[in-house]
Length: 249
Ligand SMILES: *Cc1c(COP(=O)(O)O)cnc(C)c1O
Image (tube, rainbow, N blue to C red):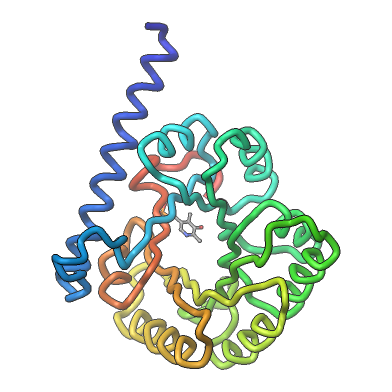
């Protein structure tokens, strides 16, 4: 075995272990909040899906996670993501989610490379994504959209304000090439419980209004339990799967 094989195998064990641990944690959090599926339906998928956030991590590690059964990956930085998506094009069962801030001049590349966008926070971005997909007929549409909500009301963070969520939802729902799937948020560190309750409430209201809505993208390595306790249907986990990020973020 070469050194690089050793290295790869070591990572593979870690990543598989980490994925198993996170899934167990999700399961436990579901149990604690009475979100368990009846035993008779145990073959059904978990009510909370796992998005592996692979930003700053090399394609080789994504490949290891894939070998361990992970198919959904989240990326924040477009250039880096597009390179990895190309490198991993041979894996045909990967689903890519864009979860980072969106500049309007990058919407075309986002629309053509991703199946999900979690960070739509203004009308202009939704309309541009839709327009690119209308222009590019061969793309596998519709594109799944979550609206990013500025739940902690921090000036510096992206996200639509709570007051504007329904207006933006209407815009997305009216776009032929977009499917409104739900809401996403990045609560500030140590955010109060009320913040999670508010997201849960908004999600319930949105679901009542739009039948296509089924996704609350909430919870990261540090707040998975609170998120699952408040109805999250998709947690976005980076550090707890791939280890700490160096450099960027
Ligand atoms: C980086 C990132 C994550 C993953 O965070 P971890 O703390 O590493 O689990 C999730 N969501 C968004 C939007 C991110 O930018």
